[in-house]
Length: 147
Image (cartoon, rainbow, N blue to C red; front, side, top):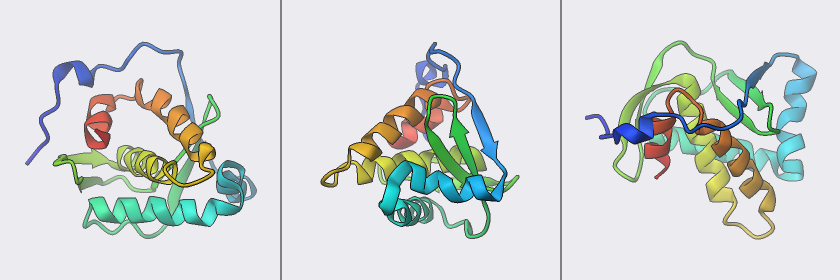
């Protein structure tokens, strides 16, 4: 079953172009999560993986790509050319690319963690990723999954 996505949600919103850059250097990869979440970086990593495993039966263990955003944001996604069947608690069901699945998992993790005490960091991370989501080719699908 595929989610019903309103046509107006499929169109990206006009915002300043935000680019995603793959982080390839191992030393830079090691710093991505601590730079974002400080000493809570392992909580963030675990939450992203938990969100993903809660949305798909696909095996998402293994290597994930890390992406920095030109607006200061960050997301990670499974390194895969295959698609993932996602199913969310809000009734959303759709087949998505690995990077779209990662964006959804990261946004869900940021949202979840932003509800905790002293969590402005995750609220900011969500906001920066949301600005990127608005211009993403799968903006409507991502927004439907997160609604």
